[in-house]
Image 1: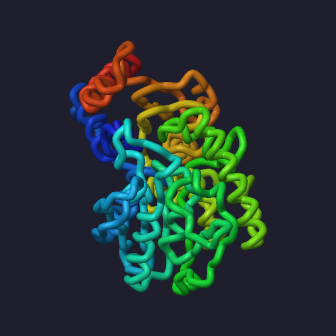
Image 2 (image 1 turned 180 degrees about the vertical axis):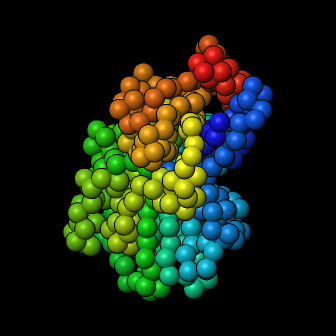
Amino acid sequence: MKIVIAPDSFKECLTAAKVAQAIATGLQQVLPDAECIKVPVADGGEGTLQSLVDATGGTLMDVAVTGPMGETVQACFGLLGGGATAVIEMAGASGIELVSGDQRNPMVSTTRGTGELILSALDQGIKRIIVGIGGSATNDGGAGMMQALGVKLLDADGRELPRGGAALSRLCRIDTGSMDRRLQTIEFIAACDVNNPLTGANGASAVFGPQKGATPEMVEQLDQALTHYASILHRDLGKDVGQQPGAGAAGGMGAALLAFLDAELKPGIDIVMDAVGLAEKLIGADLVITGEGRIDGQTAQGKTPVGVARIAKQFNLPVIALAGSVGSDVDAVYDCGIDALLPIVHGAVPLSEALAKGEENLIRAARNLASALILLR
């Protein structure tokens, strides 16, 4: 058998490459002669940078930047093969995994570090920047990123706003006069894995705020702040992005990329799939295995498993997805090309245990899957 293994990372547990290796290990315990083609992928969140750099023979560049809570962190950006395109993964500078669970607070977390990565990339003389917007710890509408790039976000007294999404409620005026002029010559592409608008019941704060530490009261405050932010963007920049699909990605980072940088929002999965040549690798395959840490109703909105399934169905291939956890609203993924969905955790266990045993559970699940394949021959 030729089996293509194309998973995303299991967030806070395993990289996409380690997930693919664990699945291959389990399969080959039962199917030692199977040809397992490992294709680690991503959808704009964690892993996007590494996937694109690996696929093009690019280079990683290390940079010290401002972390999501104002601390200094080590991050990196990628120069793709050829040197004309840079890739920035905001999760590396402004990501949720950089903040311990008890310290997460989207009221004050910032995307400034992502802007600092963009500045460093501009110094390399590039012509295009791909920004992976996923896995963020932030809800500031990309305000910190734009402040790092020279934009002034001013309150009623003409003072610069402090970091964080809550401060946007005090935004009075946007001044782009000091924005880095090099940005005018750069093509921006935002690798986006969701279609959420900036505000409202399906917006950045309501949908993603709680996983970043927002209480219900915080969610309401942050949504009001982003609603005000959207109105000022419309008034001062002439950009009406509040309800634009994808504007709410990564705590509103999509809105800033659209409004300030005229970015094109593209499904991150499509960008990565093209770069890694997934379609070519599927030729002659018998089975496709994908997966992600959690698969639920949001997965159907453009996450890795359904992106992989969409391409696999062009070759009429069966698709099996493995997941660390499965949401109650998961049925939508079956209409997106996934034929079977298998959770890897046996029974109810604490999250800490599920994360600690992620690799072990993946290997076991893949081994059991291989055994079932033999029985069905």
